[in-house]
Length: 541
Image (cartoon, rainbow, N blue to C red):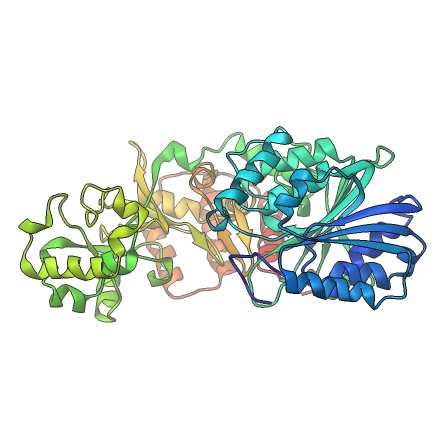
């Protein structure tokens, strides 16, 4: 498997395509007519054709199959599979075309739309592709402002192409279940499809890429109703199949992301009871994105570059990425000095917003070197008065790491270091202090809300966009310096997370929030379920 940003090709494992076909043709789950029309909008290497041909159930059905693929070599592979088959029940029509163009003029309706659409981010789409995606969204009365990836247009067009009782099944990015821009799409699916099944995995399905995927099967048939969630610990569990049923928690006004299927309604209501009484990060502080340089490799340099081009009067301390930060509750001047001595790029070039002719010769040489590398042609540089001037250069009291792995953190910015947009800047409101907020954020209940409100990606990455972070519930209290210092020490000494949370939960949840041991135990149990799911720890481990 190769991650191809330009064509978005992630080829489906045969075990997955076989499972999908078998389930759809199993009369216990779905009802298809004896003669069916099928659309595969991105046929790729033809794995779904292979599954259709191989399954005995499909041989009982007369099938008119349309396959679409813009890559001629891939289409030929798929067609060759059909040519070698003894199954005469399937009549094939192949279309060498971008599906977005195909669907524009195609008037057919299908009993089954099946496949694995490409995953291509908006910035990799052509102008024409983006226009067609927008028209698909508009035709379904959906916003065209939230198009982030081509797969959403494939999904919408597929649903719109179904017959009255048609079935759709796609392999999709798991972000469908959790990101805010997909909420409208989730609502659309619920309104358009009467029955929906979602199958998630406790391991990465595609080799070589950290992309969580799901299978979604939905039907317009009014005889079947409801949304169901299932989880497989391993891809091979689809063979049996061995599936763990999830909870249907979609009819909620709060905590309504579809990823929350792992928790019961009682558990979500239990968590909701805290959200009503506990304020959010935005109530204690102002949150802003870190500095956008537009070209970190040029604007963020190490000590050797500072010395070579005599940049010292024009640089400020900066953290470029989270991997440079020690596991701690604060970032100190000593931490910065360690990074500097290691030769890390920790200096931000903060030139004045004025013509370069007034700058020293060596500095002008550095600017010229950047121009030779075309740094100044980048969009965010072009729109500046002087392309080499970075705006909004200031240090905040605290910082939050946008993406984390084992656990998220608010850090105290004791060294007054600048940060890039890999972080959020935190400025405390009157009456609250950053040290107490950083400590109080570090508890099992707040960590639960980061799991539920944020989104997770393959490899166990947890991400919170600004609005998600601002809305995280944190039970804030004034914390003693000795406790803050102890937490920082435990983190730096890399104590086990369970041991650290036992300490912070005792201070924040038991002593300050006055929760009973029973409630704290329940919180710990819920947190374990959520974090194990994100880190791909199976239920059997």
